[in-house]
Figure 1 (cartoon, rainbow, N blue to C red):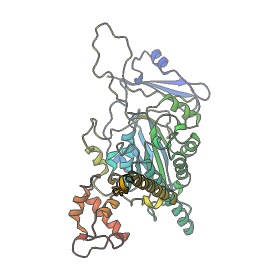
Figure 2 (figure 1 turned 120 degrees about the horizontal axis):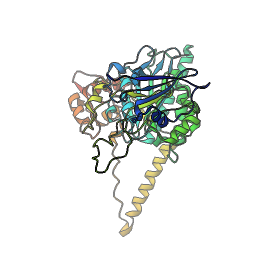
Figure 3 (figure 1 turned 30 degrees about the horizontal axis):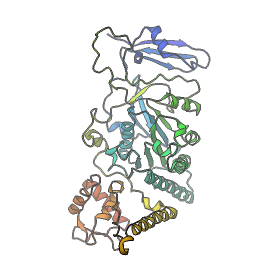
Figure 4 (figure 1 turned 30 degrees about the vertical axis):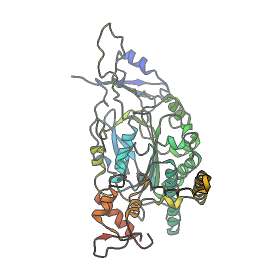
Length: 475
C-alpha cells in the first residue's frame, strides 16, 4: 500500500525564505518533482510531504452545489493538495463589501475555465454580472446569455466600466440619504460585479483606452466594494506594469482575491516586488507537464505519446487566501475535449434561467466629444465620397449605405427593439427573428424576462390581449 511520507522540519527564525526544489527532490531521491510538496508552517516549522503520485492530478467535475455562495460569501472552486477546499470569496457579510479580484495565468493554464466557474457561481447565487470578454467573445462564449451585459470590444468595455462607476456613485448617494454606511444584499440593490476577461488587452502599454480603463478599475476597487459593486479582472501572467501600471493594481489587489495559475518569471518578480507575495517567499513551480520524469533516453528507446501532454491546467496558488504558498487546483470545469459549439457541461452549470439584473445602457455613457468624433468621421467620409464622384460632369456621388448594427455587440434588449416593426410581432415571430439576425442564440426564457423588463421601463407597450409584442410610440 502506498503511503504519504511526511517530514517536519525545524527552520531558522522567520522560516525558509528560499529553497531549491530540485535539490530537495534529489536529497529525497524522488525523480518526479511534482510528488514532493513543501509548505512553510507557522513560526519555525515546515512540512515536506512525498506522495506516491501528485495529489492534484485527478480532479472531479465541479458541481452546482460548489458554486452556490454560502453564508460567509464563499464559493468552492477546487481543493488544495491535502484535500482542503479552495474557497473564493464573492462577498464579506461582516463588512458588507463586494470583492476585488484578479486571476493571472499564462496561455493554457486554465484561466478561462476558472472565469467560467466564477461567472456560473455569480448567476447561481443571484449576483448581477456585467462581462467584458476581450478575446472577441471567444474566451468564455457560453456566458453570452447568462450575464446581464456582455461586451467584446475595448470601447464597449470603457462604456461598461463607466456605467459601473456611475452605479456605484448612485448607490453611495442613495445610501447616504438613508443614513446607511454599509451594503446589504437585496436591500434594496443586488450584489453586482464587473468582470473583465483578457484585461491585459485593455491595460497593456499602447492600448487606446489604457489610462481611463486603469482609472475606472481603480475607482471600482476603491469605492465600489462598500456599496456592493465589485470588480474582477483576468489577464495573462506577464508583467504587472503591462496592466495599467503596478500602482493601480497594487492598491486594488492587496486586500482582494488574487489567484495565480502557471506563471512567467517576470510576473513572479513583480508579485513579490508589489507585496502580493512576501519577499523571499518560496512557491513551488507549476510545470506545464506534471509528473514528467527527467532522464536520458537510451538509444532507440521509444518516446511516450503522452510525454508532452499539457496536464497542469487549473493548478494554482490563492495568493491572498489563508494558504498563499500551498498549491491547489480547480475542479474540472466543462468538457475535457474541445466542443464544436458551446460546451454543454458549462451551459449546465449556468442553468436555463434568465440572468439576474438588467443590462447597462451603454449609449448613456457615450460622451459628447465621442459623438462629435463620430459625426466628424462621417462628415469626412461624405466629403471623400463627394470628391470621388465630383469629376466627369459633376455627377453626384452615390448615397452611402447606412452602417448595419453589430448584433454580436448588442444586448438582447437592444436586439428586440431593433427587430420590432411598428405593428409588433408575436413572441414566436420575435424569437425567430432574433435567432436569425446573426447574433447569439436567444432562449425563450431570456426573451420573456427581457420583454418584461422593457415593459417595466416603458420601452414596450403593455399586453393588449392580441399576444403581440409592440414597441411604444417613442420607439
